[in-house]
Length: 425
Image: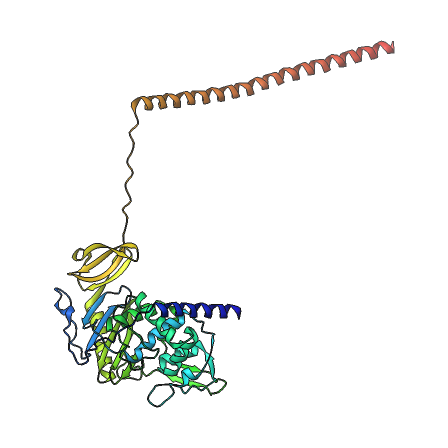
């Protein structure tokens, strides 16, 4: 119990420090309705990507961070509920799945008809693990608000933690204003930044378990019967006409200003890609665009291993076709590879092992060494000969002594016999 209190106190202190250091962020200029070119299609020799209907979109290699498809990927859009990916990620880093969350006014204020929820009640308790599934599968806004308060002390401080995490992940065009993705002019992101956030989440086994789930049942609580939940993300649901083989998870979002948004990942043959599509008029369009992007990735690119790292490159491209330069990555020097100016990945720098050269030995030294070796050999031979001679000499002495002793015994016997005869006379 003391450990939990100390841990929460540390989180609240961190949130407070972040809050004090946070700067005032002005609302971004979200240009809804704008159209953008597919800039990757202009790269010489790069596979031509599909003409998607989403206003902005990106396709990214989940392992290397390389962008394979770019359509306005760094232009501002409202995220809606795909925000919850960051909420789950941050809360996983600062809480335990066994933690018990009690719903307060903070959570139940979001239980209304126009906000997705699970109908949580004031004073109801459930585990943090169940909260994660409710936030992901049911996109429950009251659960996200309660997660935020539990972890950050207040939702505002938790949101500061979300923004701090975004900066750590290299998200340069993102600012969160709440934990659920509810409409707010100061709540915005980009397709590229959302891909980076999911990329970070996929590195966590705990996050992957939640992200790949198509269903979950929250056991009966102190105030509610059990709640069975099933995914509403078409690319994951096998009963859907839009189901995609290899899809490992995805999060949808919708508000009037954001339109439909989708962050999804697919994996085949050890290759994992992330597709983000933003602002469409129907979720089916996001799904169709994502399917087209994944097909484009799996059909137009190959894996290329360099220095133990697997990169994704256009089919037919070899290491000789790539450009290499040194780059500083978080204080470590890496080799950065690109194809006609388009980044494809980093690899560790391989240090060449120098071939040892033989040091010539001066002739006088060699002669001296040879003589010393000969003398040493002679000494060993003499020693061995002396040892053999010693053993031979010892054997001869033993024979003489035995002979003398035998003679003495014989003489003694003769004397005894003579003395005996003399007494009998």
